[in-house]
Image 1 (cartoon, helix red, strand yellow):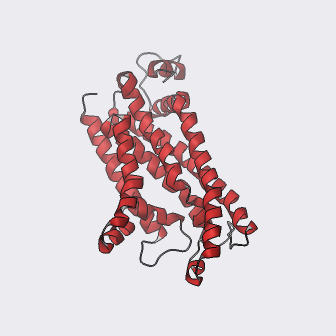
Image 2 (cartoon, helix red, strand yellow):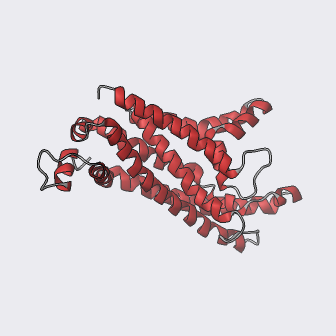
Length: 279
């Protein structure tokens, strides 16, 4: 990290005396400066947007090919919006990684001690980290969702495949939902980084949660696979990006609620552990 917490604090309140209490706004501004000066921030966000837009094009083209080769039932179930925003599958990884790094980078450099000296109230420090990162992740997630949709739909239209516009029923919610989903995964990364304090371990859990378990579950017996497809948090949360929903699955907001509740549990665990831990 190129700017220490001490330097950040002094720059935020140069005229403050030693008796001035450290405010919530100071903590938020300090965390904002930290994430801005973390070198991996720009790389991770650029990769997130690049994957979201690039894969949005590829998935849209692949969706058009499947539509042309599909049966009448396949064509009836085709969801143009989902075909474009499906790029979230890989875009979530660099954003989640950045969430992990906002915490683990301070443990790796030892700066966590300085941060705790500047903000002795641990819950306030972690809340500031989570809040600042949540805003960043939400903004970037919305950029990914809208960009993937806006570049993907012309690809479908050019191939003579049904495409969607933002004014169509359910489409705007699905595109906004892409950003909401990515923000939730980013917060999950912050919580895992806090719990495990190691980048590699937190990333392993993040990848397993978002990618490996949903993929591996397809090899389970059908009854088990259906349960995972419906109730596993990331599978449930992805329903918010679907315009044509499966009646056997949770609805868009109900599914996203399952994801949010699951992330909230992990975040709560992170707060409890961070508060009780020595460092």
